[in-house]
Amino acid sequence: METILSIRNLNKRYGRVHAVNDLSLDIQKGNVYGILGPNGSGKSTTLGIVLNVVNRSSGDYAWFDGKLPTHEALKKVGAIIERPNFYPYMSAQQNLELVCKIKGIGYHKVQEKLELVGLWERKDSKFRTFSLGMKQRLAIASALLNDPEILILDEPTNGLDPQGIRQIREIIQLIASQGTTILLASHLLDEVEKVCSHVLVLQYGKVLYSGTVAGMGSQQSYWELRSASLEALQTALAQYPDLSSITLEQDTVVVQAKSGLDAGLLNKFLSERGIYVHHLMERKRSLEQQFLTLTETKS
Amino acid sequence: MKRLLAIELQKIWLNRASRILTLTYFGILSLIALIASIEFDLGPIHFDASEQGIFNFPYIWHLNSYIGASPKIFLALVIVSMMANEYTYGTLKQNLIDGMSKKEFVLSKFLTVLVFSGLSTVFIFVISLLLGLMYSTYDEVGIIFSEMDYLLAFFVKLTGFFSFCLFLGVLIKRSAFAIGFLFVWYLIENIGYLIFGKLIVNDFELARSIFRYMPLEAMSGVLIEPFTKLDMIQAVGNQVGVLEIKDYAVDYGLVAVVLVWTGLFVWGSYALIQKRDL
Figure (cartoon, rainbow over the protein chains, first blue to last red):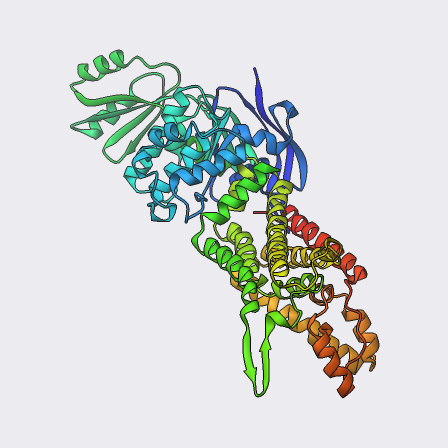
């Protein structure tokens, strides 16, 4: 598999703050990576280093197996870091043309990308007249100008209204479906869960977990049950073999099985005792729960 | 190189304030030609600038280079703001992310400085040549193209000054403060000279010989004022006996000093950008 970016033992210190602590990571072509972590966990600093805007304290990184110097490699990378940065006095189109000049490519993709993010009608409007959502979409168009090998997004939905968040997500999902490698830093877990195949969890600049989303934390599922009488339900469940725990959470009884649980058998067992459930559902632990468990236990 | 220049010129040209300042600057430069029309009567004396020999070759190269350096503050504003804006807009960061190296970034700014200085020099050359051809009493080719090193000094002076502005833009990151600092620096050089000469060594001769190498002093020293060189004023001066004998030639020692400063400013801008986290 082709490695797009490899980071080895990266460190960054700001005075006494150890913002990135011995971080190593490999980005393979075609995967969608999420970097998860609370605010101040070193996500943006790490991205800043590989994007040539923050100086590292020690460690190494190499783009495309080190075949290109960083600034040449960045021409094949599309990146959006926090706030969209453009020249306020230039129009959308002029801003993108400037990016084309920097990347050393022709202007022929400008229209296509502006159409992709729905800004073609506003191509002649000055950047300073744009709303935050439009600015962020222009940033995405700019990042896609060269059909990048990898798209790096740092908190792309920060500060947007629900509509704006949805537009940006749809664009990201569209790009991901076209096979572009994506590296998405976010503290919004459902955002990562929806689009990412791999995840890297950071805290205090350290890697807590690195691997597939599926492989993170336990994959044990649990069951939710509701019925007219919760007390009777709990009493009945206590007699059922192979259950490891039965807890009451508000109006729902949550059950964990020692091994696989056959819902049909459980339902039959309960109905024989005169209990008819109106809710019986298997649940997987969400990324959020896994993330919280992970960061709590390690801190 | 063409790419770097194209990038920078787009940034400047599309900015309305920068565009107006640049046009104003070149407009003012061409107004030098209007000196020719200065005419006034002082009692019985009739003064006509074009008849005083100020447009004679090679004197005109000196005169116009000297006068042409005064409106440079217009371009200084453009250069300071084009640099400081990159910080305020956050576009320095974006340019780097888009694949410009830090070296290319500084180079694109410095190339623009060179183009501005070069254009100004060409401007002065053309205007002086035209004025001279119209009014000069000498028109032998050998005289016309003599003593043209004043134009070289003009070019070096502007390049040095604009590089200083570029450096201040990087250092201070805010246009208004950078321009303010330029003025403060001018005071520092002058007050520093006074304090050093009076209070520390009590020897203005010595202070002079040190402070003439400071950036702004050195830049102003490469072109000596040309006015007292005029025959008419020399004659008056000799009669009254106030005029010291001056060397009006381009001081190549100071030209070298300004070039060293220019190098330091460009290198300093690069070093700052290299070192800072964005």
